[in-house]
Length: 183
Image 1 (cartoon, rainbow, N blue to C red):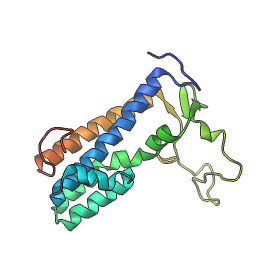
Image 2: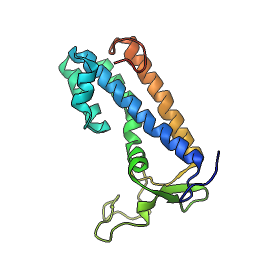
Image 3: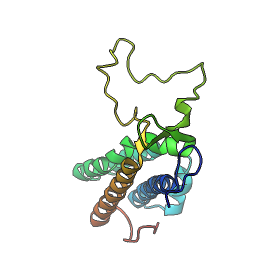
Image 4: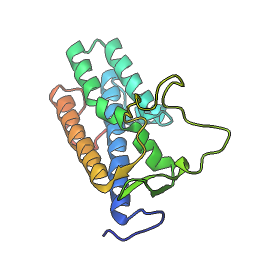
């Protein structure tokens, strides 16, 4: 199952990429279900209205809607907390979806290929020019290199966090029905 494909990727990398991207699809569908319940609308109508929105836009719309519908603040805060992990890992999901990948500088790691093939007219700046590079600490938005073990932990954490999120909104009746995919 760890057979190499192209650019240092293995089937295991692709499996973990799929798990991570699928987690985001599940988060987005659950946010849409919460929105549908909050406004008393058909879930498919909410899906149609929000289908071009990014994860971040859906999260922001959901939180604004819940505040507008006067959902108790502790519930809104709990939902915001449940969405912190996928919000932090959004850059990884975007890189998975929109980048080719290659072997990383560290042993047994991979990174998006754009890092080595940037157009000369742009350069990502993750620190201010007056910051000493030794003072700069990489955060999840700046991170671009991952080992198989790190990807597995990320996929597992996203799955566990999603399950807790789903359980919370089910218990607080913020979604209709208990089935994961029911809209």
